[in-house]
Length: 82
Image (cartoon, rainbow, N blue to C red; front, top):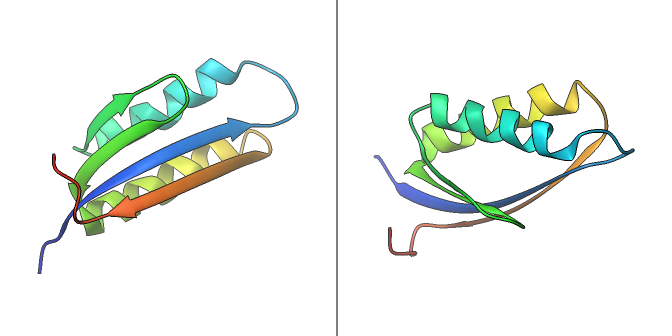
């Protein structure tokens, strides 16, 4: 069963450094996974089939986390309009 899911994601790289490049890398992985991504100033909206969305979020998180400590805040819904 395919469930269309919308996520609001905020990513906060810790410890200084170039925050925008980490966020761009994170969002780029989501886009490459075939998801709709709208990057905002404080959070991003990501829309796609739930299995692909969860897989892409994990991959993007792990990729950015390998470079240093990060915090990711995530809200999910299958009831939001797209």
